[in-house]
Length: 196
Image (tube, rainbow, N blue to C red; front, side, top):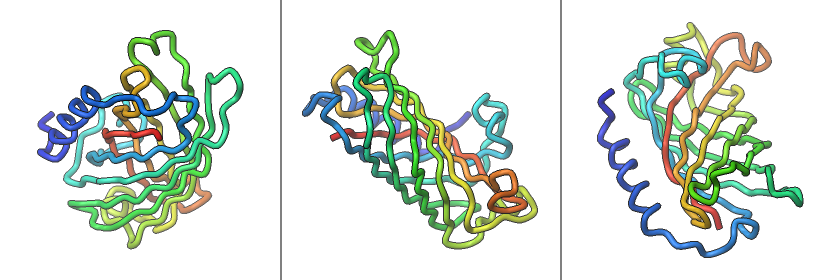
């Protein structure tokens, strides 16, 4: 797959940040995060998008997100987060999108964390598009401005670094009819997450 120039540049910046970053606080003291990620929309459902069976379409996204880890149990194996993100769509879709995953569950422990710090996260909340998303309408026959948002994220960083590279499926959904009869989109993204 031939990646757009902005995605290639984001990949290069990710590597440079990971190689040059120094830890400013231990992981247990970091409760806030800022993320910047971008990606390309796919033409099918989320299962196919994650498995690599879906094809990219001419619509891209750039997202800025702020997160707050509000709970960590004593064993530090997992955590709960709140997030708010703002997305800008380019290409077939040309709108802003505001997402608020009001609950994100992050699994923080993997046996290889001393070599490559890894976490997996799933977040869920509302999503509002500033106008009816064009590609969602084309793909499903209709859509709504207010839909359900969820994401699946894998984050990888050097041990004790504040920086991590994230890979995220950015998903808008009708919520099986709870928010709309039709609509939704899947966007494969990658970017950077900074914890402080």
